[in-house]
Amino acid sequence: MDLKEIRQIIELMKRNDLSLFYMEREGFKIKLRKGVDFEAQLAPTPEAKAATPPPSPSPQVAAAPEPAPAPPVGTFIGSPMVGTFYRASGPDEKAFVNVGDTVDENTTVCVIEAMKVMNEIKAEMRGVITRVMVDDSAPVQYDSPLFEITPA
Image 1 (cartoon, rainbow, N blue to C red):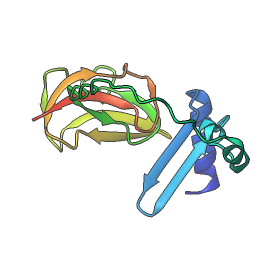
Image 2 (cartoon, one colour):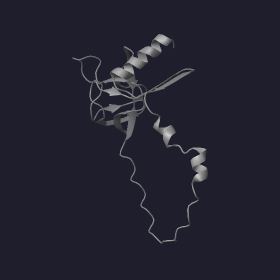
Image 3 (cartoon, one colour):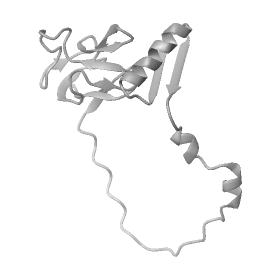
Image 4 (cartoon, rainbow, N blue to C red):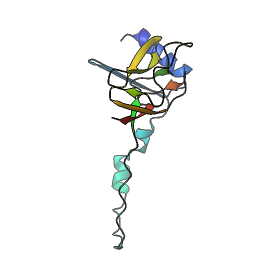
C-alpha cells in the first residue's frame, strides 16, 4: 500500500465520518484512528495503579446464584472492512439476500465499496438470514454487524 492509497482511506474516513479504519490482507495490516483513543485513556497508568488502595474485604452475603445468560438467537455476519454497504449490485438490481433466505458459505450477501472498489461479501456460514442490520448505502466500520443469521 502506498501513500496515495492511505490518503484515499483518510478521505473515505472524512466523507463517512468514520473514527476507525482497519484492513488486513495477506502479510499486511493497517489501522487508522481519528480522534481520541478512548481505550488508551481508560487504561490505568502505573502511577494510578500504585495509588489505588487495595479493596477492603466486604461482608459475606448469601445470595442466589445468577441465572445463566440466554443463548444468542443468532450469529452475525460482520463487515470485513470500512466502506459503504450495498444490498444489491446496482440501484435497479435485486437484493443479494432477504430475511428468510437460506445461505451457505459461498453465498454473496452484499457488497461493500471501499476506495471505489466493490467488494463482494460472502456469508461464510450456512444458515437463514433473520435480520438485515444496516440500511442500504450506509457507511459501515470494520466488524460492524451486517446481517443476523441463524446457523443451520
